[in-house]
Amino acid sequence: MFLVLVIWLHGAARRLSDLGRRVRLATSGPVIARGDRRRAGNILASGLLGAARCPLARDHELGRPTVVSQASRLADVRYDIRGPVLRRARELEAQGHEIIKLNIGNPAPFGLFTPDAVLSHVTASIADSQGYSDARGIAPAREAVARYFGRLGVAGVTPDDVYLGNGVSELIVMALQALLNPGDEVLVPSPDYPLWTGAVNLGGGRAVHYRCAEDLDWNPDVEHVASLVTPKTRALVIINPNNPTGAVYSRATLLALLEVARRHNLLVLADEIYDQILFDGAIHHSAAALAPDLPVLTMGGMSKTYRLAGFRSGWLVVSGPREPIAEYREGLELLANMRMCPNVPAQHAIPAALDGGIDITPLLLPGGRLRDQRDLAWSALTEIPGVDCYKPAGALYLFPRLDPEVHKIVDDQRMCIDLLEQQHLLLTHGTGFNLPSTDHIRVVFLAPVEVLSEAIGRLGEFLSSYRQ
Ligand SMILES: Cc1ncc(COP(=O)(O)O)c(C=O)c1O
Image 1 (cartoon, rainbow, N blue to C red):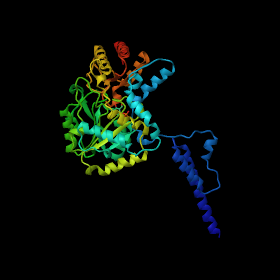
Image 2: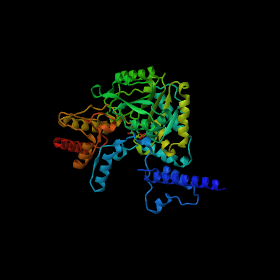
Image 3: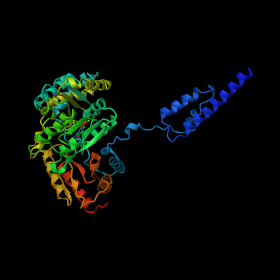
Image 4: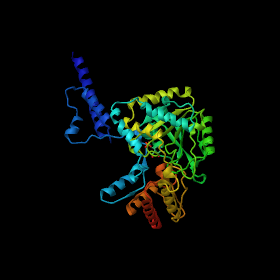
């Protein structure tokens, strides 16, 4: 009996000391995420003295805030085009300053609205939009997208190959989440629309940047693309027409890029959201139409051509051989199901726009608003000493280069903050688009010519004396 008592006391002492050590560990770490604290609490609560009070429960009574840390998978995810520069702009606005904002490709705030016919169709469909739709989207919209792809020359697209989303943004993330395993590599242009890089990294993959060459009118350097392929490469991203450069890729460049994908069994991810915003007779070639033998996911939507960015409405179209990507598509369907469906009222804009003969060309021809704005902005920028710029053949952006011999910029984000503070003009720094050098900025040319003229005047004034 005495022996049993001694053994019990010894065990109890050990459990007590263990409990003390756990309490110290759980309370002294630098940052304990909420889940870990809860787990620590559970360990303690189920410890030796079931009736004893959990010391962590006192945190709340002592007024210590619960520390919530960020998921480590966000460590490599960046979206600087809405980062510190925009935050500073908001602060200045809150102080009452008026900022000229040429930082986002959002047509409506600049008075570029969708045609009435699209809106009235959406309004008339509101009452029918109260339930969830098919997870891939409503049938009339998917049928309209399939017909549109038929007109683009993409063979064999049916409504079953179309997935609608809350903007291309959601579909980019879904497509990559369904594709990537840890460490998988995706070839992404540099510069890129940075959601692509962010979404690859968020999906656990690694964005490997291929060079788009300014002296090739920002066409991709295909040899560089090919040189980056490794056994881990899963996909090739093509953004055409391109944001931020405004490049529209030549047919030869596209065929060469697609050949790299063909040779290495890469899934082609073609972001063609600006496919109809073309200047000076530029021709857009659909990657899917050029490569009917390859699995291609093409993305597009209502935000730009149809000026409905706020509706959050876009499409992803799967083309090419079905068999090899059947399992991947099951993953895509799973993710489509998990978000229930895209916003239903916004989907009704799709058939109205695609089948309704809505044509953006008048805005793009000489005398058209977008054309005039591009021309004015390009001329004004290239008149600034030490600034040169490719004249964009598509999309809504200019991507001027600040000659490092004249403007030695080592930190382009800092420069954009300084520009904002000194001139109340909001532009986006080139490194925000995953460009390795600090010598570019992006200018959105959606604003009316008077505003662009004022803004670029301010940029010239700023650069005339700015030094880093
Ligand atoms: C190349 C590119 N892809 C996708 C998007 C996102 O489009 P959405 O508004 O359909 O999400 C943008 C927006 O600027 C873009 O420039």
